[in-house]
Length: 337
Image: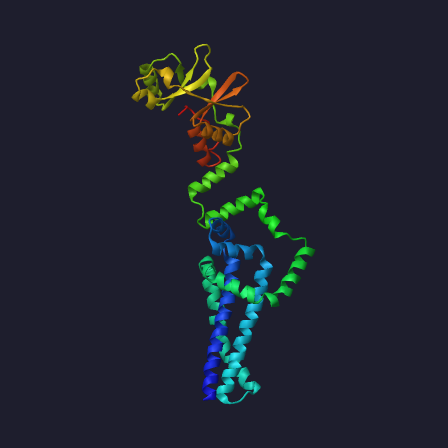
């Protein structure tokens, strides 16, 4: 009876040690395999599991110490279980029996406790880590008394080496930012449209708005005294959705625009349909011009230097340039749409 209970207890203890070994081996592989960019995005979205994983990512010494202690505990439990099981089975505790038993069971421990979980976590790290991080957090708190000296030693080495991971995470250089965005695209976090938009913001948005404006002499528009019929005829002729309006005194005194749809459905005179052009300084960037248009609620802006009108830019044209590849982003607009 005693041997039976001993064998059952040893078998149960063996499976506990094997499960712990699989747990810590898999979590370790998943931790180094997971995309920290995806973790950061999920954590900012309120994912509690991602927040906890990200905390360990920012404090790797705590994770490494807990994993190291956990693997040793799992190996110790497995070894004790093998010894107890063989002692209960053969009624002896000789060294060669334990050695032979350990040798026979080593492939089982290696495959089920190391190889298989590592492969699973390698293929789907975030999926498994989400479910395991609460248990890992429990083991972290349980082992903290034992792992604290290891954590302290690790931090001393980090201090001697002048490493500050938190500062490094907060400061991203241009090349590092490009790498992060490229990684996000590969991980499926950014679609092609989003990727082009970010690329446009990085390369195109800082360019001067004057590179996208239509020079004042080439703007397609009419004089402010033009009636609705003539304005609509002009718009159909050039395929315009918006018609620029200028004063009669000079050829470049553009100050407003009329939407063709308003002139089509409204019976009001053209003068009451004129919307003002947002005024931009000549040194404004494309992104600043786009933000100014969004703030004003208008779709067109005029670039002025002192009292002189340099040209007209459109919101649609600026947005299109942000979505274009870098080589096409600098092309100028032909008509004020």
